Structure formats: structure tokens, C-alpha cells
Image (cartoon, rainbow, N blue to C red; front, side, top):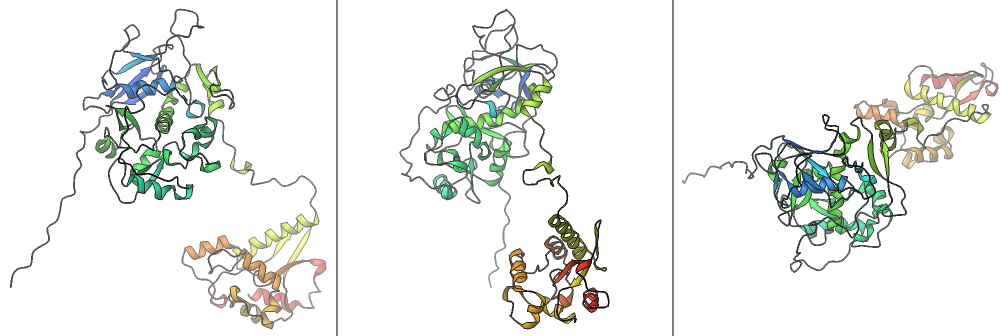
Length: 488
């Protein structure tokens, strides 16, 4: 008998990855402020583009130009006194620091370096319609192999993008793909203010669906998508190709995919790619904003004018107040309303007693009682029959199919049954009006009382109610009903 072959185990495939990306950073300084520490540093970018710590020139220049208010005429120098760099787009920056200059406005007087304004965040950035940065658009786009398409509805965006792209646009994987927005979904207000709908393929999108367009989405693997949404990398033009550029250190993703060219479909809008680039860059300006000096800033003046920027000079406290307003306390939510200042009414007094009753009945097995400043209330059982067995009988019935037996109708009226059914959550095991407590018990694996069918029921669900003292019979009359309730 021939010997059976033995299984051969495989080694985990290893991707061709870069050497460890060193944490070398390059500082980009504003020449209009003194070189005191990092007080004039507008951006700090990681130099991942070579093992020696080089940074792609065009990527660095573009980032500086964006935060300087789309200053495409700006340029870099190595020192304050040196001439502008005459670099090609794909050359590498290798020094520790550079200065980004913007040609001085003709209206600015004096010989000192101009304190050109900085855009403080993405919300105040105006998109450069019809004035994209040079070299941003790919020089040629081949669409001959792309099939004709129909415009999907927002509900069909994911399936359309996965069918169009077929694989993760960075890794080439096919498993567990997701569609990722280029201009983030949460930036819908910026999207509307800057009239970005003009770059959508589907011009009929409105409201919260404005960003659910095929021109604003690509297919990505889930972990790649998560890193994208955390501003970990961007797409930028390198050697006339869309290329992945990481902005922060990672354990594996950056070493595996930094500087990987991607073949984005022609449907993908270069305008949305630029918006994503800016969105990822602007958080890096925070160090400059809170550096302790007064800053000249570009701020949006009006939503009615595309180029409505005003320049304001603010100190750190003013910047904090304007750009990072304090969040409202949680109890100030519009969903919660304060109690009126008027005197308590009979209705509010009854509501107070009801809430007190709920806390007592749902959280304690002791004798259910309730007190109030204006008087006391006692718990009585609303049943014609004094025997507690009727209440237990009611608890053993499924409320979804309540039989119209005389015993149950004696305990729970049709109105109360309908109310209970309307208040029940989706979990059929919960029968008590105090659902939070019941859910907590069930999550801990604690069964309810066997006589209640294993459910958690408070006395209110069993037909108990509160009455004021004046509504109660004398203690000698009908007190057996009260005693029956206490036995539960």
C-alpha cells in the first residue's frame, strides 16, 4: 500500500516592504515670525520617501501652499537668506527645515518678511474652483477599457463601487471590500458651502446624500479604509501617477504601501482627491495656531461668496474661542427640557409620585411604599378579587396573545394590556415596565421569579396602582387587597 502524502505547511507571504521608516521629520517655517523654537513652524511632515529621510518636494510644497490660502505662487528656501529652490516635482527634500514664502502683497508696506495669513482649518478653507494647483491633474487618462456606466442611487453606491473597482485600490485584495468617501461624509456643510456638488456625477443628489457620489468614492480594504479615515495617508501626484503617501508612522501599512502607485478610475474626481488631501493636512497646523504668538489668519466671512476670506490677527485665546468653542454640557441638550419654574400642579404632583413608584417597585423586593412632601400614598391592588393567585395567573400569560379570560380582565384592563404591548421592547423576554433593569438582569444571566414565568415584573405591570390617602378605604375595609399585594 502506497504511503499517504503528508500535508506541507506554508510560510506567510511577505510583501516587499520598505526598510523601517524612520521618524525623521522636516519643519516648514513661516519667515514672517521669529525663529524661536517652533513658534514659526506652520507644518511638520514625516520624511518617508527615502531610507535616508527624504520628502517628496511637490507633496511638501502643496501642503504649505494650501495652508497659506492656495498660494500656488509660494516657494521654498533652505534659509532666510537663500534663493528659492529650483526643484522638480519629484525631487527630495533632505534638510531638517525649510522656509515657505509667499510673494508679498502689493498693499503690504515695509521691508520685513510678510506675515502672510494662514488658513487655520479645513472648515475655513475655500476650494480653488477652476484654479487647481499645477500638476494636480494627471496628464492623460485612458478610459478605453472602462465600461459604460449608469448613475446609481445612493442606496446602491456600495455595490456599484465594489463592482467598478473590483479590488482594493491600494492592496489589490478582493475580500471584505468597503467603499470609502474621498471628501468625508461629515463635511457636508463644507461641501455645500463650497458648491462641491458641481464635481458630482449625479447632480440630483441632495441633503445628506450629497457626498454619496461615484466620483467621491473608491473601494478599500477595511483596515486601509480605517487608516484613510484617520488621515493616515493621502493620494498625491508622483511621477504623474496617483500615489499613496503616508503622513504618520504605522507598524506595517506605511512600510508596505507608501509610494505605491494606484490606478484610480476616471470617474474619481481630482477635485475630491484634493479636498481629501487638504482635509488630512489641516489638522497639522494646530501647533502653529497655539504657539503663543498672535497669528494672521484667513477666516471665512460669508457663505454667499466663494472667495469671501477676511484676515484677522488673533492671539492664542482668541483662536481657541473662535475655532474650538467649548462644547455644551450634556444636560444642555435640546432633547432635554428644564422643569418649569411654576408652582407644582396636580398633574406634576401625580407624575412625581409615578416616578417614585417606578423606582420603588423595580429596584426593591421590600414593601413598596412611596412618600411625598404633601402627603403619603399607599400601594393597593386594583383587583376585585382579594386573592393574589389571580395576579400570578396574569403574569404567566404571553401578552402577545392575551386570552380574554375573566381572570385576566379582572387584573388588567384592555387599555393596560395595549399600553404594555406598546411599551415592550423587541426582546420578548422583557415584560416589566422597567426595561433597563430587566435587560441588565438578563445580560447577567439571572432568571426572574419562577412564578412570573422567569420574567421580571414589577407590581405596576401586575395591576398595582397608587392612590392618595383620601381615596383609600379605612384600613379595616378591603385591606386584604393590600396585604395580597405585599405577599407578591
